Image: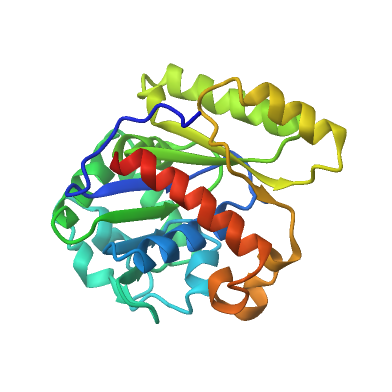
Length: 259
């Protein structure tokens, strides 16, 4: 029951945006782990941290070179390469977040009136990377609309709760309202606790919507420990159930993309 994807041949760069309308849903942890797994598979991988909180940058222990440098990345003559920094892991680079509020305001302002700005900027990396992962900010804005246009896949972690279903439907409605290709929107369950009847019932219901991958990420302490270790789960708990779940989910996503 793999969801329908607009399949992309592996020799084209694939941009995957990790997004949710609200925070606290495991978005950043998933972005960090997927980027790590893609690089471990031998794909040239870039993680662009656009979330002002800068948590992905924190996990990878990477800081921006210039404050505020965001305008140089998104203007018409942007030189994205100047912001790319190496991580501690082979095949994996990072554009770290500039977590000053001024930089985020600049980015929002620059995106207004041009929903394809980010897509144009990313084109310059087409021959440099196989995968680009974007850790998005929560909420709707001119920037999120740009991200939705630029991404091949908008990957949304969903906690199986009533409020999360409401959020999921709001994002679907936003895609329709903005005339964004709804087939880009793919989801997976996160912070799952199968001891809860509500989680089981909601998952069973939403699996009927072909947007959801079968594999999911349970609510596990190892995911929370990523902040302590400042590393992807595979680096400090490779044999854990959490690492296994992320590997299986990434395999399912990757098979859909590369088929």
